[in-house]
Amino acid sequence: MNTGRDAVNELAYPATDTHPHAPAPTAEHRWPAVAALVIALALYASLPSSFFPGIRYAVVGIGLLLFIPLIVMNPVRFTRQTEWSRRLSIGQTTLLGVANLAALVALIFTLVTPADGAGPGLLLAALQVWATNVIVFALLYWEIDRGGPVTRSKVARADLPRADFRFAQDEDHDAIYEVAARSSSKSNWRPTYVDYLYMSGSNSMAFSPTDVMPLSHRAKGLMGLQSFAGFVLLALVIARAVSLLG
Image 1 (cartoon, rainbow, N blue to C red):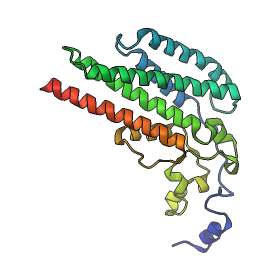
Image 2: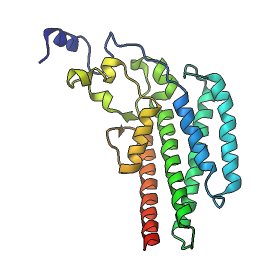
Image 3: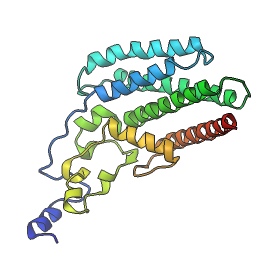
Image 4: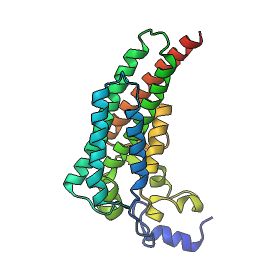
Protein backbone atom coordinates (compact mmCIF):
# COMPACT_ATOMS: atom_id res chain seq x y z
CA MET A 1 0.00 0.00 0.00
CA ASN A 2 1.31 3.48 -0.85
CA THR A 3 1.95 5.81 2.05
CA GLY A 4 0.76 9.39 2.01
CA ARG A 5 4.26 10.53 1.13
CA ASP A 6 4.36 8.11 -1.82
CA ALA A 7 1.04 9.40 -3.04
CA VAL A 8 2.28 12.99 -2.87
CA ASN A 9 5.42 12.03 -4.78
CA GLU A 10 3.36 10.29 -7.47
CA LEU A 11 1.19 13.38 -7.88
CA ALA A 12 4.13 15.76 -7.88
CA TYR A 13 5.39 14.77 -11.32
CA PRO A 14 3.96 12.92 -14.34
CA ALA A 15 5.03 9.32 -14.89
CA THR A 16 6.67 10.27 -18.19
CA ASP A 17 8.96 12.89 -16.64
CA THR A 18 12.10 12.43 -14.59
CA HIS A 19 11.77 12.45 -10.83
CA PRO A 20 13.05 15.81 -9.51
CA HIS A 21 15.51 14.03 -7.19
CA ALA A 22 16.77 11.52 -9.76
CA PRO A 23 20.57 11.54 -10.21
CA ALA A 24 22.11 13.11 -13.29
CA PRO A 25 23.04 10.51 -15.92
CA THR A 26 26.68 9.41 -16.07
CA ALA A 27 28.48 9.43 -19.40
CA GLU A 28 28.69 5.89 -20.73
CA HIS A 29 32.03 4.08 -20.55
CA ARG A 30 33.63 3.50 -23.95
CA TRP A 31 35.30 0.14 -23.41
CA PRO A 32 32.32 -2.28 -23.47
CA ALA A 33 31.52 -1.14 -27.02
CA VAL A 34 35.21 -1.14 -27.98
CA ALA A 35 35.73 -4.66 -26.64
CA ALA A 36 32.64 -5.89 -28.51
CA LEU A 37 33.77 -4.34 -31.79
CA VAL A 38 37.31 -5.73 -31.46
CA ILE A 39 35.85 -9.21 -30.84
CA ALA A 40 33.59 -8.81 -33.89
CA LEU A 41 36.53 -7.75 -36.07
CA ALA A 42 38.59 -10.70 -34.82
CA LEU A 43 35.77 -13.16 -35.51
CA TYR A 44 35.27 -11.73 -38.99
CA ALA A 45 39.00 -11.74 -39.77
CA SER A 46 39.37 -15.38 -38.69
CA LEU A 47 36.69 -16.73 -41.03
CA PRO A 48 37.92 -19.47 -43.41
CA SER A 49 40.11 -18.26 -46.26
CA SER A 50 37.38 -18.96 -48.81
CA PHE A 51 35.30 -16.06 -47.44
CA PHE A 52 36.51 -13.02 -49.44
CA PRO A 53 40.06 -12.88 -47.99
CA GLY A 54 41.06 -9.58 -49.59
CA ILE A 55 37.82 -7.82 -48.65
CA ARG A 56 37.91 -9.27 -45.12
CA TYR A 57 41.32 -7.89 -44.31
CA ALA A 58 40.47 -4.53 -45.88
CA VAL A 59 37.33 -4.25 -43.74
CA VAL A 60 39.27 -5.14 -40.59
CA GLY A 61 42.03 -2.67 -41.45
CA ILE A 62 39.57 0.17 -42.09
CA GLY A 63 37.70 -0.68 -38.91
CA LEU A 64 40.88 -0.49 -36.83
CA LEU A 65 41.97 2.77 -38.46
CA LEU A 66 38.62 4.37 -37.65
CA PHE A 67 39.20 3.51 -34.00
CA ILE A 68 42.03 6.04 -33.73
CA PRO A 69 40.12 9.34 -34.10
CA LEU A 70 37.11 7.97 -32.21
CA ILE A 71 39.16 6.90 -29.21
CA VAL A 72 41.15 10.15 -29.26
CA MET A 73 37.89 12.09 -29.02
CA ASN A 74 36.45 9.97 -26.18
CA PRO A 75 39.23 7.88 -24.65
CA VAL A 76 37.34 6.72 -21.55
CA ARG A 77 33.73 7.92 -21.57
CA PHE A 78 31.41 9.29 -24.24
CA THR A 79 31.42 12.98 -23.38
CA ARG A 80 31.97 14.69 -26.76
CA GLN A 81 30.48 14.32 -30.19
CA THR A 82 30.72 16.07 -33.54
CA GLU A 83 28.92 15.42 -36.79
CA TRP A 84 31.97 13.77 -38.34
CA SER A 85 32.68 11.58 -35.28
CA ARG A 86 29.10 10.31 -35.31
CA ARG A 87 29.32 9.56 -39.02
CA LEU A 88 32.62 7.73 -38.52
CA SER A 89 31.19 5.66 -35.69
CA ILE A 90 28.04 4.70 -37.57
CA GLY A 91 30.04 4.10 -40.76
CA GLN A 92 32.47 1.81 -38.95
CA THR A 93 29.63 -0.35 -37.64
CA THR A 94 27.72 -0.32 -40.92
CA LEU A 95 30.82 -1.38 -42.88
CA LEU A 96 31.36 -4.42 -40.68
CA GLY A 97 27.64 -5.21 -40.70
CA VAL A 98 27.37 -5.19 -44.49
CA ALA A 99 30.59 -7.21 -44.83
CA ASN A 100 29.34 -9.80 -42.34
CA LEU A 101 25.99 -10.09 -44.12
CA ALA A 102 27.93 -10.74 -47.33
CA ALA A 103 29.82 -13.48 -45.48
CA LEU A 104 26.46 -14.84 -44.33
CA VAL A 105 25.24 -15.06 -47.93
CA ALA A 106 28.45 -16.84 -48.95
CA LEU A 107 28.07 -19.20 -46.00
CA ILE A 108 24.48 -20.02 -46.99
CA PHE A 109 25.58 -20.95 -50.52
CA THR A 110 28.37 -23.09 -49.08
CA LEU A 111 26.05 -24.84 -46.62
CA VAL A 112 23.62 -25.86 -49.34
CA THR A 113 26.44 -27.17 -51.55
CA PRO A 114 27.56 -30.72 -50.69
CA ALA A 115 31.26 -30.93 -49.82
CA ASP A 116 33.15 -33.73 -48.12
CA GLY A 117 35.15 -32.88 -45.02
CA ALA A 118 34.04 -29.26 -44.82
CA GLY A 119 31.28 -29.76 -42.25
CA PRO A 120 33.01 -28.93 -38.93
CA GLY A 121 34.79 -25.88 -40.36
CA LEU A 122 31.54 -24.54 -41.81
CA LEU A 123 29.71 -24.99 -38.51
CA LEU A 124 32.44 -23.02 -36.75
CA ALA A 125 32.24 -20.31 -39.44
CA ALA A 126 28.47 -20.17 -38.93
CA LEU A 127 29.00 -19.57 -35.21
CA GLN A 128 31.49 -16.78 -36.01
CA VAL A 129 29.09 -15.10 -38.43
CA TRP A 130 26.20 -15.40 -35.96
CA ALA A 131 28.21 -13.94 -33.05
CA THR A 132 29.51 -11.10 -35.23
CA ASN A 133 25.95 -10.36 -36.30
CA VAL A 134 24.81 -10.11 -32.68
CA ILE A 135 27.59 -7.66 -31.81
CA VAL A 136 27.20 -5.53 -34.94
CA PHE A 137 23.42 -5.17 -34.69
CA ALA A 138 23.80 -4.28 -31.02
CA LEU A 139 26.21 -1.52 -32.04
CA LEU A 140 23.74 -0.25 -34.65
CA TYR A 141 20.89 -0.18 -32.14
CA TRP A 142 23.18 1.57 -29.65
CA GLU A 143 24.18 4.17 -32.22
CA ILE A 144 20.71 5.12 -33.49
CA ASP A 145 18.50 5.00 -30.39
CA ARG A 146 17.74 8.42 -28.86
CA GLY A 147 20.61 10.11 -30.68
CA GLY A 148 23.44 7.77 -29.68
CA PRO A 149 25.52 7.31 -26.50
CA VAL A 150 26.67 10.93 -26.11
CA THR A 151 23.23 12.45 -26.60
CA ARG A 152 21.58 9.94 -24.26
CA SER A 153 23.85 10.92 -21.38
CA LYS A 154 24.29 14.64 -22.01
CA VAL A 155 20.81 15.83 -23.02
CA ALA A 156 17.93 16.38 -20.61
CA ARG A 157 15.25 13.72 -20.94
CA ALA A 158 12.67 16.18 -22.20
CA ASP A 159 15.04 17.15 -25.06
CA LEU A 160 16.07 13.64 -26.12
CA PRO A 161 15.27 12.57 -29.70
CA ARG A 162 12.40 10.15 -30.11
CA ALA A 163 13.20 6.65 -28.90
CA ASP A 164 13.66 3.80 -31.37
CA PHE A 165 13.24 1.17 -28.64
CA ARG A 166 11.14 0.83 -25.50
CA PHE A 167 12.90 -0.93 -22.64
CA ALA A 168 11.27 -2.44 -19.57
CA GLN A 169 12.66 0.43 -17.46
CA ASP A 170 10.70 2.88 -19.62
CA GLU A 171 7.39 1.54 -18.34
CA ASP A 172 8.09 0.24 -14.82
CA HIS A 173 7.32 3.52 -13.02
CA ASP A 174 4.02 2.18 -11.61
CA ALA A 175 5.38 -1.21 -10.46
CA ILE A 176 6.16 -2.20 -6.88
CA TYR A 177 8.61 0.17 -5.20
CA GLU A 178 11.85 -1.82 -5.57
CA VAL A 179 11.09 -2.36 -9.28
CA ALA A 180 9.88 1.19 -9.94
CA ALA A 181 13.06 2.55 -8.31
CA ARG A 182 15.00 1.39 -11.38
CA SER A 183 12.57 2.88 -13.90
CA SER A 184 13.56 5.62 -16.32
CA SER A 185 11.31 8.23 -14.73
CA LYS A 186 12.40 7.57 -11.14
CA SER A 187 16.15 6.90 -11.55
CA ASN A 188 16.82 8.77 -14.82
CA TRP A 189 17.96 5.45 -16.31
CA ARG A 190 19.42 5.49 -19.83
CA PRO A 191 20.27 2.35 -21.88
CA THR A 192 23.94 1.50 -22.46
CA TYR A 193 25.67 -0.87 -24.87
CA VAL A 194 25.14 -3.89 -22.59
CA ASP A 195 21.36 -3.35 -22.81
CA TYR A 196 21.49 -3.31 -26.61
CA LEU A 197 23.78 -6.36 -26.68
CA TYR A 198 21.28 -8.30 -24.57
CA MET A 199 18.45 -7.18 -26.86
CA SER A 200 20.42 -8.17 -29.97
CA GLY A 201 21.26 -11.61 -28.58
CA SER A 202 17.64 -12.22 -27.58
CA ASN A 203 16.42 -11.13 -31.01
CA SER A 204 18.87 -13.48 -32.74
CA MET A 205 17.81 -16.46 -30.63
CA ALA A 206 14.07 -15.82 -30.30
CA PHE A 207 13.67 -14.35 -33.83
CA SER A 208 11.34 -11.72 -32.34
CA PRO A 209 11.37 -8.91 -29.77
CA THR A 210 11.37 -10.07 -26.16
CA ASP A 211 11.25 -7.40 -23.44
CA VAL A 212 12.48 -4.58 -25.73
CA MET A 213 10.05 -3.36 -28.36
CA PRO A 214 10.99 -1.54 -31.60
CA LEU A 215 9.11 1.73 -32.09
CA SER A 216 10.44 3.32 -35.29
CA HIS A 217 10.39 1.94 -38.82
CA ARG A 218 14.19 1.75 -38.94
CA ALA A 219 14.29 -0.18 -35.66
CA LYS A 220 11.67 -2.63 -36.91
CA GLY A 221 13.54 -3.02 -40.20
CA LEU A 222 16.87 -3.74 -38.50
CA MET A 223 15.35 -6.18 -36.01
CA GLY A 224 13.46 -7.92 -38.81
CA LEU A 225 16.62 -8.27 -40.88
CA GLN A 226 18.57 -9.62 -37.92
CA SER A 227 15.82 -12.11 -37.03
CA PHE A 228 15.58 -13.33 -40.63
CA ALA A 229 19.37 -13.76 -40.92
CA GLY A 230 19.51 -15.65 -37.63
CA PHE A 231 16.60 -17.90 -38.59
CA VAL A 232 18.03 -18.82 -42.00
CA LEU A 233 21.49 -19.44 -40.54
CA LEU A 234 20.17 -21.62 -37.70
CA ALA A 235 17.91 -23.64 -40.01
CA LEU A 236 20.75 -24.38 -42.43
CA VAL A 237 23.22 -25.18 -39.64
CA ILE A 238 20.77 -27.65 -38.09
CA ALA A 239 20.17 -29.24 -41.49
CA ARG A 240 23.92 -29.52 -42.12
CA ALA A 241 24.54 -30.95 -38.64
CA VAL A 242 21.82 -33.57 -39.13
CA SER A 243 23.33 -34.56 -42.47
CA LEU A 244 26.75 -34.94 -40.83
CA LEU A 245 25.35 -37.08 -38.03
CA GLY A 246 23.47 -39.17 -40.58
